[in-house]
Amino acid sequence: MNTRVHYLFYFFASVASIVVNVDEPKLKHNEKVELSPLLISCGLNDIIIISAPILTNTSKYYLHRPNGGTVTLDLQPKLRANNVSTDEYNDIQITYFTSGIRIICPVNKYRIFNVNEAGSIFNPMDTFQEKELQLEGNEFMIGPLSVEDHGNWVLSIYYIRNGRWIEVFQVISVEIIEIIPAKPPKPVLNVGEDLEISFAYPIDNMTSCEITAPRSTYDRFYDRSRHSFESCGFLIPNITREDAGLWRIVGVGQIVYEATAFVTIKDVFL
Image (cartoon, rainbow, N blue to C red; front, side, top):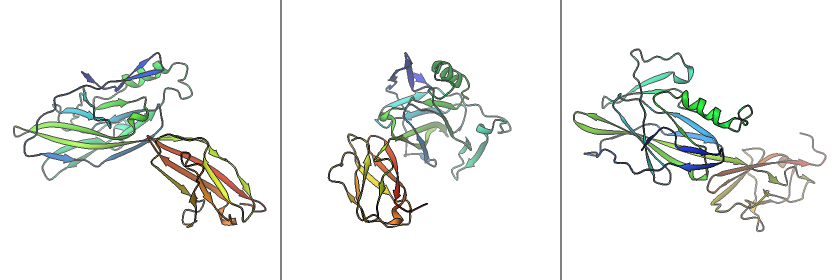
């Protein structure tokens, strides 16, 4: 099955993932060329439009998902004679490798939209179809994003040179960030008191947590809260005037979670 859109809408709510087994070209002598990786930060339910690099009009495109599934992309890129586009998004740059491979790719390699944004919430399918119709020959969609989409995707492009298949690949790191409330969101303390902050609710499968003080270069002592391990809780003892301001908690689980709390110290004006 060939596809340029990775998910299907079902009554605008549930989403079905398309994962198929594909027969990729067999490489000899491990002929591979790696492109610079691409990091995309986005949110749950976002849809990403990615512009794939162009090698030749006969290239084969495959997308490997973080969970190990592989999708064949039915892309039909077109090589322009002058390699110039009037569309700002599709402005291109040409890179030559020492192996003689010419790769054409946009300066801006992706864009993000959400069918639930203002103006499209009443007709989400219309927005989706409009974006789909506007896809260039080398573009494809990923989304709406779920927690399973967080991680490293790999775009593989195969083409034949001197009778042998060569793979050009790019790692696409999809970082899904969810903003959640902090507890407490706006603590007011006296100098010398202890500050205890965390996510407003526990999150399953947390693997790491970190906290950033208002002044990034300020080396502040803190300890993990014994009562809020699942909520990325932190205990900062003996608050000083330097601790006033915005604190940021970042937790990594199935996706990335972020929360901020603004700390006010009594009789201190920022």
